[in-house]
Amino acid sequence: MQEIIEKCDEVSAVLKSLSHPVRLKVLCRVLEGETSVSDLTDFCGIAQSAMSQFLIRMRSEGLLVSRKEGTHVYYGIADARTKKLLKAIKEIYCR
Image (cartoon, rainbow, N blue to C red; front, top):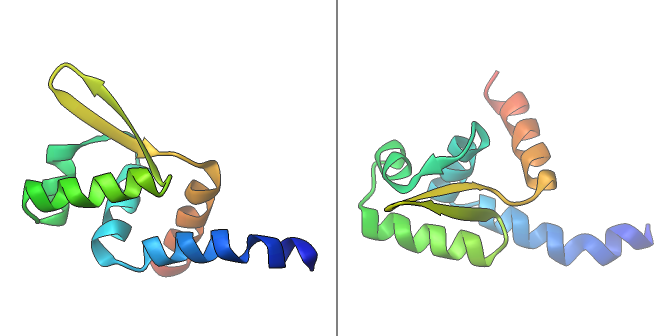
């Protein structure tokens, strides 16, 4: 029980990040593999400037990691626990 109490703030922060539809779409898309900013922008149907703000926030929250290849930036999921959580959500809601 003590472990649950100690992790509540961390879990709450992750769930808060997942609560926005665009952030959830980004994570679901990146769950399939590393994805470029332009692909994420097209997938979510938002402006690139808006996507950049989402990605900056998600990186600062520790949800995403990025790598640069030439002029392109690719994003992936930063934490294996986040991957597990997203897979469970997908299994429950997308079957």
